[in-house]
Picture 1 (cartoon, helix red, strand yellow):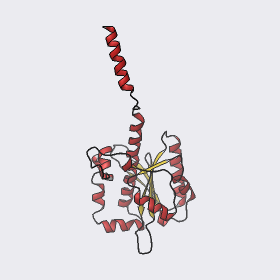
Picture 2 (cartoon, rainbow, N blue to C red; picture 1 turned 180 degrees about the vertical axis):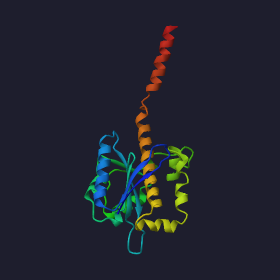
Picture 3 (cartoon, one colour; picture 1 turned 90 degrees about the horizontal axis):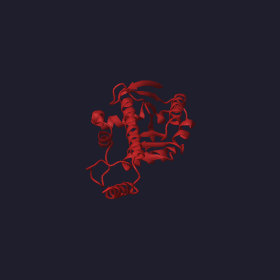
Picture 4 (cartoon, rainbow, N blue to C red; picture 1 turned 90 degrees about the vertical axis):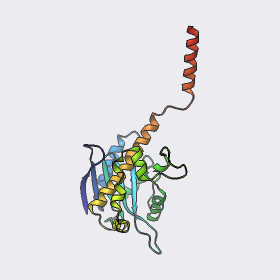
Length: 227
């Protein structure tokens, strides 16, 4: 199965182009588009987010669906229902030249290991940004990070979707309805937009090497010499 959709964002006239599929042909096509986009990018940043299968007695949680985002192109790959393995997907997420960001990688790492998927550069946004005024030893949630970095537009997204948490999480094991596809899409885009902004901010910071103090000193000397 394959579904194409357009999903809105917090920005006007800036929608997301989404492919939801379990077909390896469509996965390869979507990844090719992302590779073309990344070739034009300075920072080589994408998003690799996961949903998991339910843990049962004698089994460990594995990857149910993988959400990937580069710019405004999103792939929701229903991994556990895939028609056949996609080698291009495995190579792409393990490419050492790309950085893949998401929020809270603890369970992601376990699910990837249980599924035999490698990702060399998986970045946890919780370790890259701390909300001003939040408790030092507590991790900021996805919702709080998004509200602080991007926009309050996404504030109620999780609560509105997870009214029946058991049913909501069980649905990732089956073909997704539109609500789950939209949620997965926005979740991937939120992580992408956040990490791009974090990277951009870091690249703009001046080096902390005392240049400012030396400038002030030299300026002070010139003033004294002009007296």
